[in-house]
Figure 1 (cartoon, rainbow, N blue to C red):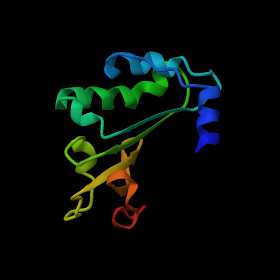
Figure 2 (cartoon, rainbow, N blue to C red; figure 1 turned 45 degrees about the vertical axis):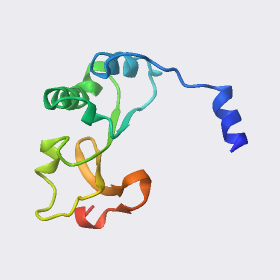
Figure 3 (cartoon, rainbow, N blue to C red; figure 1 turned 180 degrees about the horizontal axis):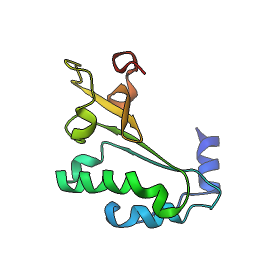
Length: 125
């Protein structure tokens, strides 16, 4: 753990303060030109209202075009956050106490809180 902390301390991440809806595009654009930008969030979208969540999803859908490079969007959120994701989940799927993990808005797995379980089978990945 100390070795990992030393590595992190030697090259600390830049922390950008502000509204994620207003800062995510500029933050992504600041990445090196040859980098694949990965936007990851977990249990964050519940802090936005439904309009804000949809706005974020729209930003993610067009982010690659907006900044002119490859972007991968990884999400780990509960059902109800992105209705467009929920609509594509298998009927009757038990998502209680689990998060829906997505890549670019496509559900790929269910995960337990704090990573306790990870299950791709019900989503036929």
